Image 1 (cartoon, helix red, strand yellow):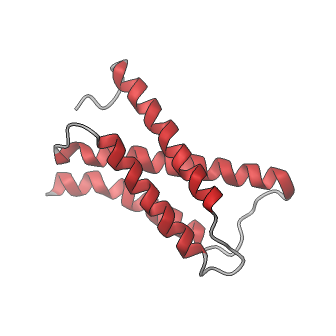
Image 2 (spheres, helix red, strand yellow):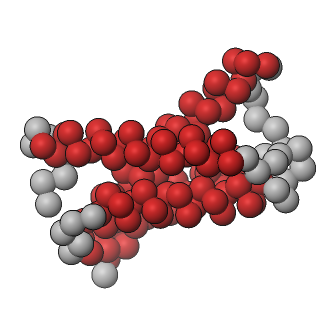
Length: 125
């Protein structure tokens, strides 16, 4: 039980960070186009990392295949709840584009995991 909990604490903490950032009425981003690019890059990276953390957490569950699909699905569901949450935060609005960037980050990071696994670098379980 302790081992399982220790595997799930990193994604839970990361989701807490995402929730905290989403709760802010404004974030210190550049104005205009640079701000949009920065925001999209942040979504890409934050959800890519979340997917990796979910993937790692699913290892002790014994799911031998499709672990990556579950990790992406969990990230996408959290992304949906995050966009809904933002609809209640002043000066924030939900965005399907943001959600798409979240999922894209998840897919790219998962592809990097698959590549690293094939090369024998990570996640040997």
